[in-house]
Length: 381
Ligand code: AMP
Ligand code: ZN
Image (tube, rainbow, N blue to C red; front, side):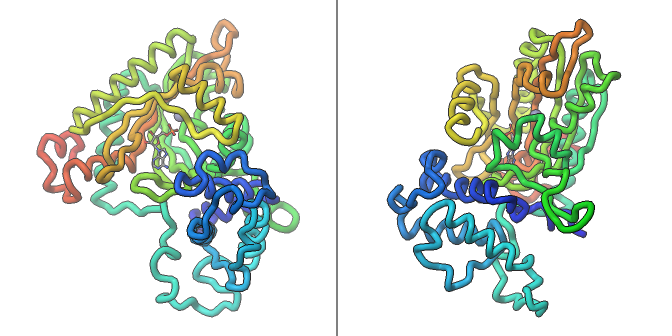
């Protein structure tokens, strides 16, 4: 079975709450309600909150594409789009009624022409050609060389992770709008949310390892994982499924505070050596809700997250890498004890492999054989 079959936004259909958050994240699009969506009550009239008819159409299209459903004609009326709660309920009903794309309820093969275009191409879910994958291999090898002196071991992580690990990392509570869940057959009877969720950040896979007895020494590991985030927009480089390569370091607070500055400058020179023009910016994660706005501003003002941005398309500038200083967040959550018994601090340096590929193509063109010799040599192409 194709793993991606269970990795889409349908998996958010869970007891109403996640669906509600998913609808809210659609309304949070800057072109609809933006930040105001976070504080909108479940039953508040979205038109009174300023959503126009055109924007309702936009919501309808996004819902259809995100959940791979077709809202039946008799449901396309103002009442269905009255409030977040009503939309969520309607979408849940339709998702339950309609089987996945390509397998209509009556078992007849679908008319390909009628499903051409967006419906069979989920936004933010891309394939990688052999030539493009060879660039990613070059990036992986180059990063491995760059950090060879400090990385003890490298792991390749699966696209799913224990729900309990994601919860300890705090992801479902801070980013419910981005989390993807895995649903499947449960022991006994029926189906429902399983003990797995989709990997949101590669480094989450490492903390349980680090906390094991033999890892109590301070150290450094790297990891690559296919990550999922339920991103609302489909601009170039803002993917829902993407590969993240991370270097994670843990140890004494002072050492880690220093390491993240060093990691930032090593990463910047590496990116510049690839010929990319990089902007550095203090950043924050898109924490959910009003408490989230507070967390985001604290993260900004304490400069816990730095992003390195590059052009990935004409006029589209995105983070191709970022450094996150977690302080004792993961240390507390996963019991990262230091030899003296105190809680370890951690930091990670993350590279978005798909965005790096886009940035290189934006810089040198889509024909890899025509890229400058120095860059091709660096990536062993
Ligand atoms: P973050 O955990 O948000 O700091 O993400 C780490 C890195 O992953 C970022 O610097 C990006 O390069 C990459 N990344 C994050 N979100 C996405 C996305 N939606 N699509 C593609 N790459 C992403
Ligand atoms: Zn990380």
